[in-house]
Length: 417
Image (cartoon, rainbow, N blue to C red; front, side):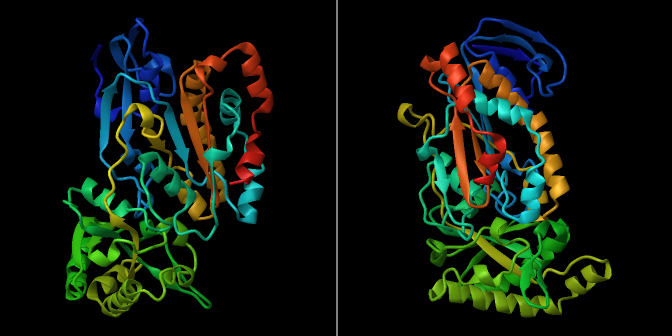
């Protein structure tokens, strides 16, 4: 049973879930009063935890750092739920943009000092080939989206993971069996030799302006049979059968890059041609729109196009069952590296790594040392690597020594992502 007071479950941070899970299957009274902050001893709780734990399945954690589009660029606006379960699937921390490919980014990564991550790696089993996802830097779905889709039990080709349907449902839209796409209002920056997509967060779209733009564009979409739905200021949704299997590049692939490389991914298809024509019409309408004139007068970027991503029909998350418990375990997606990485702000990226090491990674390290089942997925621009706890039968001192000696070093591991 679980008796507790002074806890608001919906507001438990990641460290709180670690704290409570640390006490599962014990009869120890937890009489600890204080603020939950990176340690087990400072939990805001009074009660007795006995043979149970809090299972936190909160895909909205993916939005722990602000970002546009699919979570906000990833897949991460699913509803948050706290559930009590009698089993004990591992805590799973998924970290996008843990490794980067630019030369400046690699130079910054060479100076990372991450003692908690290194200590955690020494507590985990050696990397297994089946736990590595090698891809291409030009894949439409980045490694962190592929890893999260795998944890959810989804199926889909590159660029066909249905994040839009998932987020639309989280925003209160009835998705049914329709095919959905995420429509993100964006600014395309026209340079001397390329057109690049600016991070939608820089638009600073407010609710009033976004709804006015949505109303202005609604007729263009409905004119070609596409139902347009409003979600939030930075997230609109399109519903049409042609979106069922239409590959699209994730916003995390396109931000700061030449859009031409990503616009032709479904070249030759009628659906892609329809979307390109619609983009052209939207651009012409917005070019002289009074809303953009007012935005520019206030020093804000105009909204001059949209980006379509996350297309497909909704897929249910994997049910928790004995055979699927590991795959369906709670995943916490840590987004704090994303914004500095996309902005190529490498001092900021290094600082975000330090706070990540001091916080969630420290919590996971403590849990691993205490014998809790944990796993971590590190994602770069090409690949993702998952590492997990060894079996409970391999907790002897000799096995621990072997793991410590064979554990990967942080720098080479990140460079391989």
